[in-house]
Image (cartoon, rainbow, N blue to C red; front, side):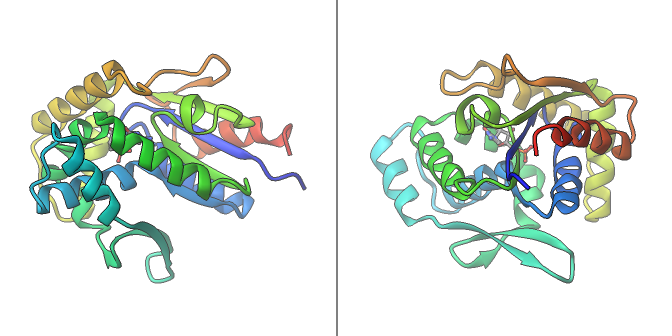
Length: 224
Ligand code: C5P
């Protein structure tokens, strides 16, 4: 069977990662959560007080960073490691969500992450979710889906996810964070969040996860 690249892009908390994980499991593909990579870089930058406006500081910091994914059989998921340390839980916290879009704007950061993502998907057989996968990382992806949902639904979903991790965050705070990130992500100069011309639009506001997976799998079947 032919191995392809599946690109799932879209706004924050639309169900991209849950859908991507299930599609990858169904196909036996690797799942790459590119948002986790930007989050890990943000964690490092905050820990080391890297100035985003100083290109040399940014470049030196990027040279010190290694972001990897390792499968954890206990949680049955790929978890993210920063310089050998598991940071899966830390990078999901609100203080990272509040800074990650500012870090993701920096061209040097994007160049480094995009190059690494292209390497990870070189052999194809990957499901990648993010903001610029279908437009910048793999413009030749065989299947591209652009996911959206209304902001209140997204905020409620995000709140539930955080609660599962024992983080109690106010709904208004989450909604404001989503709106802020969407704005920065879609207006930045370098590879902004936008629907690729050949991406299928998927509004998940009133969809179950199973329906989302089915939508993507229907697009995949004709390509493999
Ligand atoms: O997917 P997630 O919400 O974890 O992504 C966190 C942030 O990382 C996004 O809001 C965006 O600023 C950045 N990001 C990006 N490009 C990607 C994936 C994520 O700029 N491909």
